[in-house]
Image 1 (tube, rainbow, N blue to C red):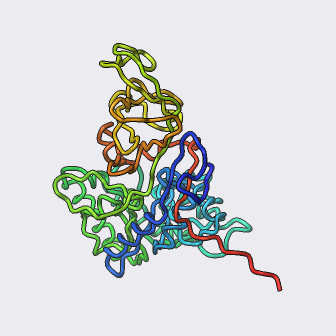
Image 2 (tube, rainbow, N blue to C red):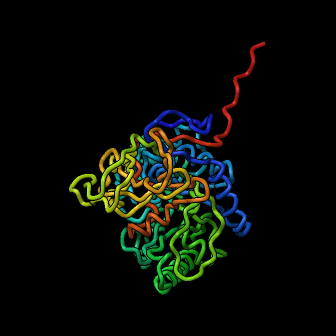
Image 3 (cartoon, rainbow, N blue to C red):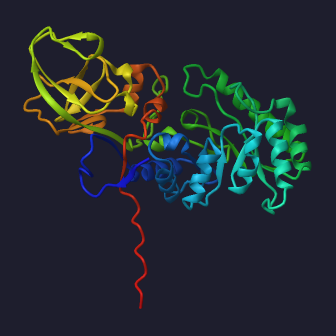
Length: 396
């Protein structure tokens, strides 16, 4: 991925790009941390390239703002962070194949283990010549109702004993809520109660945990956190609000991502003229239309065809016809004096108007995560308010 610091308002002449405000990331992490009890720490989840914002810059900004842990999905993500100089604890939140055991130990990653294959592989890897001398730390992943990973509650005590006898240090216990943002709270309540009962059984058997974690962004806002020691928000870190039912109180987090492109051309076309592939749209009036330089090849959703907007000169320009791979047509008839080369905002604020990720997700009936994680590497990421690079020491 191309990544650049932004030194001017328009960082470079590009057809389309992403601006990520790292000051917003820091502010969001600080805001969330301030809402937690003194004994509860924050894990910033940066999987899927920091939800499309950029893995390394987001992780570094989150740590600068007080995040105690970093959460990733893959060993490769963890290794990338280690190579970038991130020394904070890194949790592998997703199941890993046993073939990854050597790399997990080599990069000092903490696996959330929910199956015997990985448990056995980590124990074996720890005995190999050249393995780290310290016993590997793992967190036991408990299946409480999501059905995709984790030991069943009735297996927990036996598998904890098996892990410790194999030389693994079980320092954490975790689970994942299946529907923390859903309209019904019964499943979340049941999962939480199951998790607490497993914890009690393990502690009665002699287990002691440094870390207990289960709360994603929605759960942080809806489920009490006083009996947990670590929360792991994802979208809240990026200033994206989970779609919660009712009148749930939402924190004033700041969106960090702005998606921009440019106008390539502006033309006048007569009423009835077809627009884009399939001629799914015909102009209903004499119109001025702008072709802008972004499409589904950049991860801009094709499902926005004929139903979304972009911001030009601080006004909403409706998308006409199908979104193409590399370009999209919008209606600028009611936006005076639009010219080629102008900046267009696809996600973010321009003037007094704003297109939020949450609005686009609701329009497409999908999760907010999909919108930003779908943005491709063809879009350069440009970082606002990056921490200054230390100057080299002057030679005497």
